[in-house]
Length: 146
Ligand code: T46
Image 1 (cartoon, helix red, strand yellow):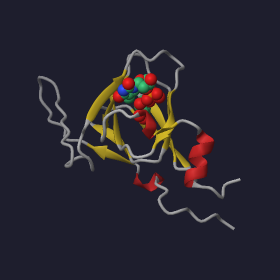
Image 2: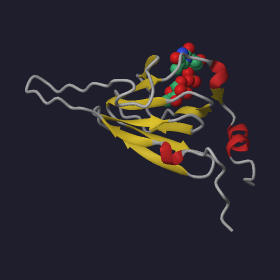
Image 3: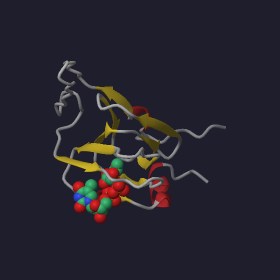
Image 4: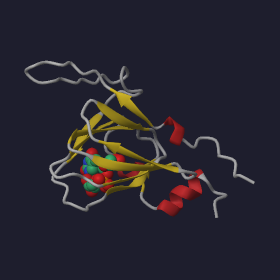
């Protein structure tokens, strides 16, 4: 018998969001408004860059944080896991991004040379918001899993 998903599991809420693209012969422009293009107000911006070939980032979930990831340069993969199923997203354009709600385990890999992962976040940095142990994460979201 298929296991019933616990309330609050959230892979379905993860989604690609297309952003406005203002085409111009001088170069294109994309903008993001918190609360309009994103379902949260932007409280923090950070970016990953100079990622060495073969490196992986992430490997954690956030208890409350919501995020929006953009491949501002180059490309990379994001694997999302809600404790029941997982899905790989390939980000490679700066005019769309990946919305990640809270309580989603993520791993990032396959960074292309020179890639930049721009992240917009719903809260300031707080180490206590991280779940860095996958067993703890699974226990919280899917305690019946073997
Ligand atoms: C995520 C993926 C996509 C800070 O001091 N302030 C900050 O705002 C951030 C984001 C990090 N840090 C410190 C905390 C750690 O000592 O920087 C170090 C590395 O951070 P973290 O372990 O979060 O790095 P990643 O690459 O594993 O994860 C980051 C995001 O933090 C995370 O939310 O989803 O990128």
